[in-house]
Length: 290
Image (cartoon, rainbow, N blue to C red):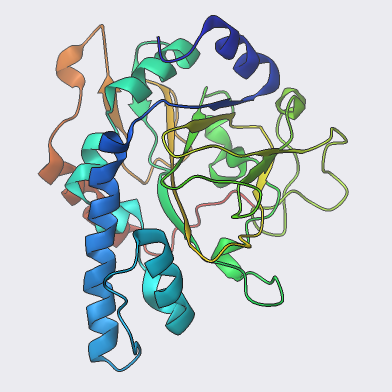
């Protein structure tokens, strides 16, 4: 069993569960290799354009990303699951241990929600400041989808590719607050001023191989990365098949079905094409409800 009965009860009570040792290093290595290769290709391009002085080829993955980002912050522009479209990542979306855990939380008929990202959070600068996309304020994931999904049992799976601690920017969450439902957001995908729940927040450190499972209404934020390396993670979302995704203009697909196993989507080339078509058709589509 990937999750104990006690862990399942914690998730349904608190709206968040930090579960260690869901994956081992061999499970995550293909994803790390995939993004390391993408990073090398991107670095070579920037080097040819004169925007990188040193490629740091012998540095470990997370440290190398930080050193490259310090020279050229644009190094990770256009890097996301739907743009890189890696085969290892596609396979990982149906990882048996992840689906076994999700089955205990939302049932056996599981669809992969199209809101899925890879995050490369660089170190804060010398003042502790962070920039734009990496400075994620308090929010609920429900704010990143339309209200058609307000009754969909969507679970976020936040999966670190390096050990995450308070020092390098782990998540901070507000347990139990999911019971209050959707909270006003704005401007942008952040909880509106004066609306943050009164419950005390807590950090959610997790080692590589673990997962932070969160309810769509659980408030959370990203904390500063004060280390010298990039904090890499992926976040995926899953829900019971047949429920609205909140992103009808982006592709979702069945990853597990006991009732109709033939409906499980395993075609990598088709997955790539559906994402290319969707992104081309909706270049200006707003992805947040506020």
